[in-house]
Image (tube, rainbow, N blue to C red; front, side, top):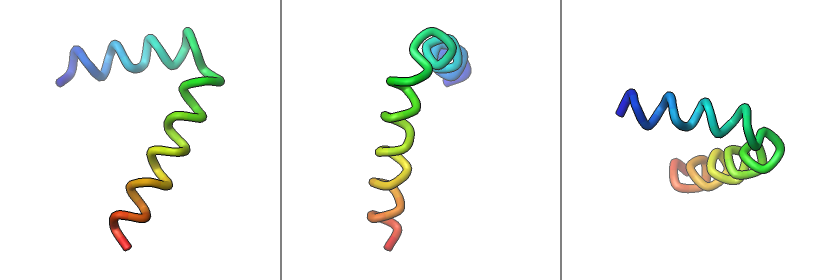
Length: 35
């Protein structure tokens, strides 16, 4: 899991704009499930 997390951080620095859009949509999706 830690390796995947490091990889995700690396990808975030590499493709920050695209990754931010994915993270935001993921947060919204998780929030809808929580409700």
